[in-house]
Image 1 (tube, rainbow, N blue to C red):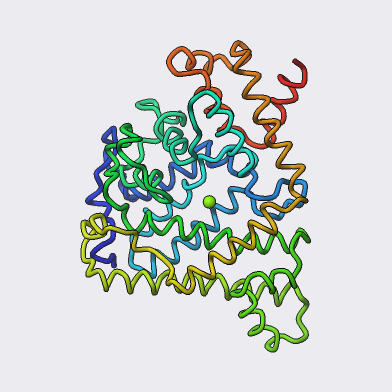
Image 2 (image 1 turned 45 degrees about the vertical axis):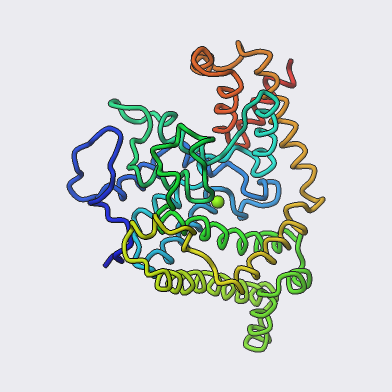
Length: 372
Ligand code: MG
């Protein structure tokens, strides 16, 4: 049973190239499956989320992070009677535009582009992947995804203004995205704020005492858990507290969104689109807890000096390889050299680098830059 304000697949604005219906999968299910079978999706497995493989093979990479976001997003969508198929497609595609080496790689790629008057944006890059770079079908380039999935790729995490991005005009930039897209960004936040505490703790970059002192919402649940399991080892009490924290964030997101929908008298998808703000939000108190958690992770994990050597290496490799190909475009693969006759060279190099896995960019750096 879908809510009145959910996206209905029968009312989709459709695909760029019309295709006959599938006998037993609807269009959003097919989009989800197209994402899963794409190259960009498989490459997420070898892209850093926060920790490189140096730490351990059981820490999150971009693929396992993506699967966790999909799990959380599906649960929230089902509780809100939203379109779970669309939500799943959007969650699985939400990070395919990320370059190698996590945030450090993204920063370096953006900086390299800016030196040539361009910039890098992972949402815009994801759209280029699904519209153009994936080559799977004889009849068209890209994955030919429905409008709603493409719109969600662009609008799930931020707003783009038509004046600055005329090429995105078809995505109704002056209107809010459906709730299915709005919830992806929050599911992403919930997933990484909890997962990064977990991986940071296991990597011994964060201690239990630091987390308890710096993350009040975690501390509250830890105090609740301690007397229940006095004999349990620390890590299991940690897990129990973290699990409750995740439930608390997801539960608050569901109840606060329901309250906002009621208060704003939202009845239809049109009402969602016309409403001035996003409706999928945490309550003010829990939003503050989320902010405190994120700030703790920034200060103690993302900007921890232990991760500095890897971040500088990521920046160096990305920047040097970019600059190398700017000077030696003849060393790019033939298909990228062809593209450079139609598009500015920095854009072509950026597209090539952004698609790389951590391993592949290191190999390329070894082969071209170090040997040059
Ligand atoms: Mg993400």
